Image 1 (cartoon, rainbow, N blue to C red):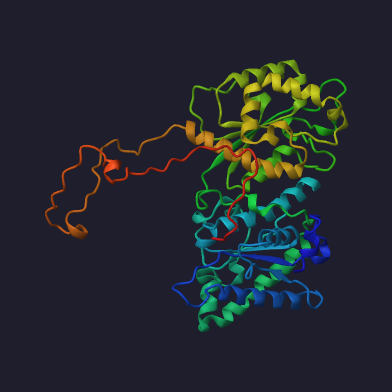
Image 2: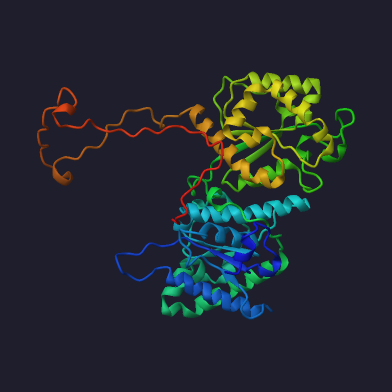
Length: 470
């Protein structure tokens, strides 16, 4: 394959082998044994798009106009090939359908591509560039889309009225809509080429596809999840003596620990990553929020606290962090960025790490249990994108354990519906056999009923997921 030679050394994929677009779709299961492959219609769309892209560009013959995993299934090299294509393609083209947003594998593809855009924006101090061109395979109501999809600024109406009402699947299946299909696909190809030529995202080292989270969350059509991000850092106006101001701004939210590689403050990079996990986010400064925490109240959302080790050099802030550590709030997880190329930080690394550990022993221990690297020091912007999903998941689980549960409105007891007679017909119920006073005796040949216990396990390291597609 066109990317195989570049996978051997694990390096970045050069621009010369970038496919123009990556077609992301949810595989449709066959109906009955030996039936036609329902994905053949997606393959036809892919071929048509590739032909249009070749005609609209000066790509040389034999170039990879697009990438689609039509022949890739679970097995050797499958995740590596997907990851390499996502790390190099110019445009990501998701085929929207209800099945698409229910697919964990499609959510992984979306997240992996969006990470490239987030890293590009961080390096150039700009919001992540939009290089996602969605297509309607089957129309999906906006209310059923996860946050990353519903936030896209894209006008489908320019592809034709029938396309909006029936999607590409409806157009491609019916001969009477052949002209509308051709027009919609041609417009889609033009949009792909336009984005590829005007929005450039640098290729990156392929991600480990097995541990990439889904951009659609655990429930792809639920947009209501919220998370708060707090930053504990100084501003350039109250730095410790001798600390360089080049990493800081006018307030804590402008702290940029990965300068000069990254130009975008870490608060906004973290917000971009977490929004890409189907969360609505809010930002705040620890200095502004300290004293307003109330551990006696149930939590309203999971939270992430991003801490600068240099923050403990200020005695008043150190005391506020120590007081915060004594409050029981396990739904708040700590992340400690640490730039390996910050010479001042490296000179005082041991001293600052020990002081932060002594200031916040509870939170540091809790954070280390959720994700060891998050508490020990996140060494780069790329690593931040890898560990934040683990930290967010741990905070969300703690939030669910401690959040207040609200009963249904009304306050009246409703009897459960009961079936009457066979198939629910209005017949007198059959008398039930008498209940046995004890469980069956296992020695007499009976087996006691089995129960399935689920253990809470903190994922401190990477775990593998099934590579099979939904």
